[in-house]
Length: 188
Image (tube, rainbow, N blue to C red):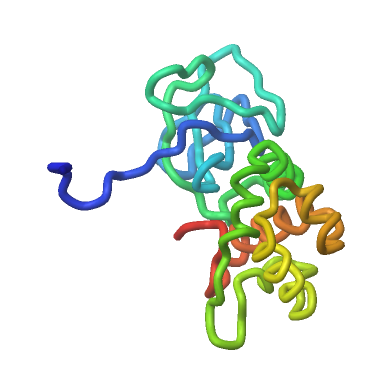
């Protein structure tokens, strides 16, 4: 039996670079300047502002370690960002980087197809993914009853859903940028 009181706080361990500003000013901590990275967390899809080490460079879409242990290019995570605080470059890269996150975490996102449930009596969470209407949603539910999906290819073959990676990434961007009332992937 655990002695913990309440849920333990979860932190991102890895993030994907959306933009790198070698001589930037922090949105999160006033008066803070230096090499700034705007990134999205891999696990919780949190928008983050990161203070980088001097004389290091970053590629957009690069996966970096931001955990307390194991950092090689990062000094500290300065804090969370709002979508409106992202640079135009970061906003433009967000859909591409979200696709990369979905592709590199295929098992996690395929599990959503196997486990999502109705949100209301008239709306199923699957229908919140662009390209999935009532008919496709019913097909997905029927197929996952027979056998859980194993991959994006499996979903494509069995229900004919074209490019699930792009569709999920599109929903991620909507949830991050528009803050809809109902979210499937991004925890608030």
